[in-house]
Length: 237
Ligand code: NDP
Image (cartoon, rainbow, N blue to C red):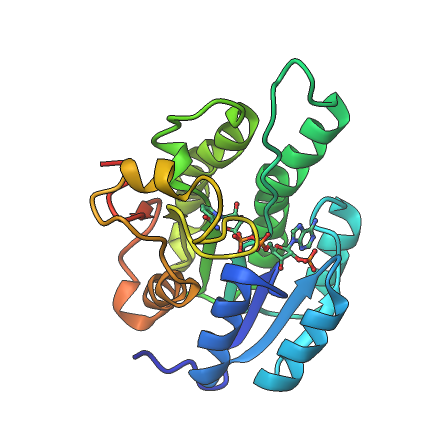
């Protein structure tokens, strides 16, 4: 287990699910953790109290408030952009504004947050996006915008890795498959369909995703950049 003693970590979207597991992991490993939330203040405050981290309300879909928040925090050693929304449905029925908001949260926020953080990030810093295995495999209907919003992150990390590489800052995307959260409960109605696509037929836990994030944020991963890592029980294999 890596130690992040004294490291400054920001997790965007940390109040629940995978983000909360990432907050717990970094806090347990000694980091000073700040995380954002939007709609779950009670969960956020409970997690902050449990972990000794700091919760701040910020909408990842609002570029100006997001970048202002990041600027206000000073230099970050690690930025994790986890906030994301699903938005499933028939594309003929889905409101265009909802699609635009999905792309603001899932695709534009990672870009603007990364650039904002990189302005003051020290050499050797780490930027990690939470994408999705749906960037590599989209075997169901109704998720075209979601999969596109996550697939864009694969190209984004390649470019940003080049942009910040001279400073030893790495930029990677972690792509979970089905993971047990409010977004995708392990006992939900689609579980059998999803498990059929997997080699290891179970949902991941948030802690398993957080373990890969911690590895990529740690000292052993300094040469890994511009990469996408599936952690999906073989969903995309
Ligand atoms: P949840 O819906 O369980 O949790 C989402 C988290 O993101 C919450 O903490 C929520 O905060 C936060 N969030 C959402 N929108 C915003 C916003 N606009 N501003 C700030 N915070 C926001 O999702 P998961 O934990 O399942 O997913 C986390 C990430 O992992 C997402 O990017 C998702 O796309 C990705 N993923 C998940 C998979 C799964 O099977 N669970 C599979 C593949 C990828 P709040 O409640 O306070 O609004």
